[in-house]
Each structure stands twice: as structure tokens, then as C-alpha cells.
Length: 118
Image (cartoon, rainbow, N blue to C red):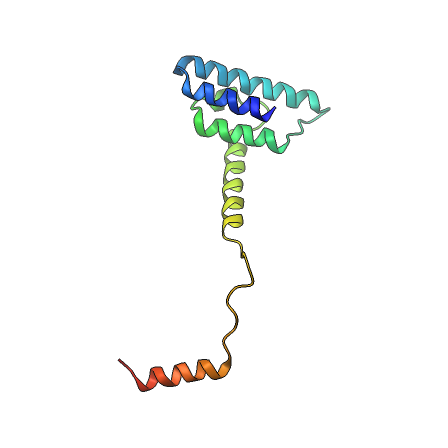
């Protein structure tokens, strides 16, 4: 499913502009229908549904017109949340870090620094 979706998105993005807009709108509406069929009262969106809308919002200028089941502000919020999660993951601690320096060494470095001001 995801491979087919990625292949479709690439062909749309690299294809002619008018056809790609129509194809993206078709993809967006099909996704919304699928989400509506999965739910009873309120649409239950999965992570891949959200990811699709974030990707569409980045590459398709008219994405707001095809959006029916959520507000456009929600898609922007998902995008910001994903960006925050990405950088949180990127900047996490990867190991134990530097070993602590003993008190004697720190005092010695400070003493040498005072003695040699330049």
C-alpha cells in the first residue's frame, strides 16, 4: 500500500501540473472516503492518514480545497508536531556522554588558569 502510494505521489509530482492536481485531489478524496468507511460516528485517522495529509500539504498548493474531514489548521499542527518529534529524536543522547572530571583536576585547572592570566 505504502509503496504504491509513494510511486503514485512521485509520478504525480513529476508529471504535468494540471493532471497532477487532479490526481492529487482524487487521491485526497479517496483517502477521506476510506477513513470515513473505517469509522462509525467520527472519522478515526491513523498515522499514515496524517502523514499523507502532511505530505500533500507540502507538495500540493490546493490541498485545502479537497480537505473535508479535518480542518486545515489541524494538518499544519500535525506537521509542526512531526517536525518537533524529528528534532527531538535527532538531538537525543546517544550514549553515556563524557565521564565526570574529578574535583582535584578541576581545582588544578582553575589554579593554573589564575596563575597564567594570558
